[in-house]
Length: 242
Ligand SMILES: NC(=O)c1ccc[n+]([C@@H]2O[C@H](COP(=O)([O-])OP(=O)(O)OC[C@H]3O[C@@H](n4cnc5c(N)ncnc54)[C@H](OP(=O)(O)O)[C@@H]3O)[C@@H](O)[C@H]2O)c1
Image (cartoon, rainbow, N blue to C red; front, side):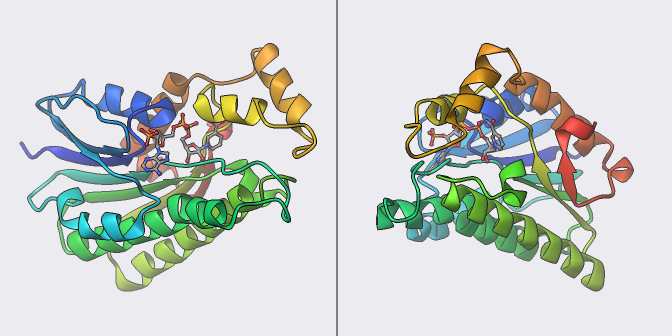
């Protein structure tokens, strides 16, 4: 039986780690994970340490990220993300502006492009999930890079699906909002200065009131969507609706 291949960015922590841990329990799955931190490999987990903010390095490694072969299902999950420097325009470091767009938008675009190039003619179930955010549709002060990059990711996903339809590539795309999850990203949000982020108190109260989802709960929902993708026909998805 052919294996299923899952390429997951940001596999070392948070949501990406929960997805990786669950998927590697099944020996029929091969997971290729990417993060900066190292991770122990297993028989069905290959790991690549690289900084997705470093576009030349990412580009040089594309050959390692998309292995050739016959697979039953191939899934790219663009999950790695950064909240960015939480501060208003006028206070941001230009380097940080470049980094957030590199990590949250440019790197996923490069990976989607390569996925299409490598696998478009392959007879397999092909799915791309770009992990987005409700922030893609809201103007949140202090988060210009995060809102801007996730909004771009949503539109990129809509265009990719349109191209798949026109060219009959058989690739199903989602831009998926995972809800508010108890991860390091939320720690970073809660530690930001209230001067730079007017919603800081709300985010602190989500944690104190126990309103955050666990990475495992959200990973289960994403795996349900992958397993039953024929039932999920909207491109923009929010796990809080299923
Ligand atoms: N947490 C939330 O409430 C929430 C809400 C809406 C959307 N999201 C989205 O969900 C996704 C996962 O978020 P999370 O909360 O799980 O985040 P997280 O706990 O901060 O984990 C982020 C993951 O991305 C990797 N990563 C970050 N920067 C990277 C870089 N430059 N190069 C390579 N890997 C990098 C990290 O690995 P290393 O540090 O090892 O590189 C880590 O594995 C993100 O796209 C985020 O925008 C999260």
